[in-house]
Image (cartoon, rainbow, N blue to C red; front, side, top):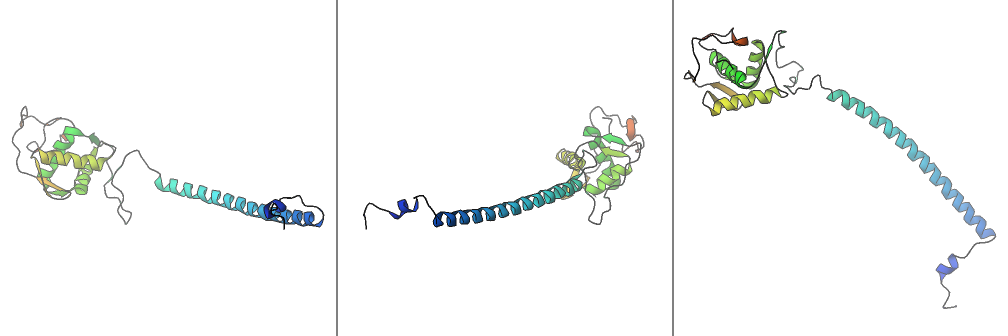
Length: 191
């Protein structure tokens, strides 16, 4: 055997005659199999695309928000946890919210946050925030820090007792705005 000859070089020589016809037939058979696989992949891709579109539609329906506000979610049985707001409700936030919370807790005693939120709705108040549950919790925590409320357990707030008159607050002056329906001795100062 010639030492300069390698099988690799021999395999790369052009084919002629019967060997060429056999190689062409094998190449065409491989090409047909590849085309069949490509067609199956295209069908699978179309089916996957359709299923993904249906999934996106279902997820969009599940995530649809009725408003831009975050709030308490429905209970597991589907019932609403908060009573509906009256048509003439008032939006409160900040100092007015904190004063109203202290007043309501002095009247009713310790309450859990969802109960306090429901009581605010019963009295015609809406917490003005994109996340009312968090705003309510933050307002109660602020009042605990300043000694006007106490926190007997997690998520529960209660009054500390009769508060000392605040500077600039006249107890004989009636409250203003939507707090007029509250008892004069319990009404918070005007915000």
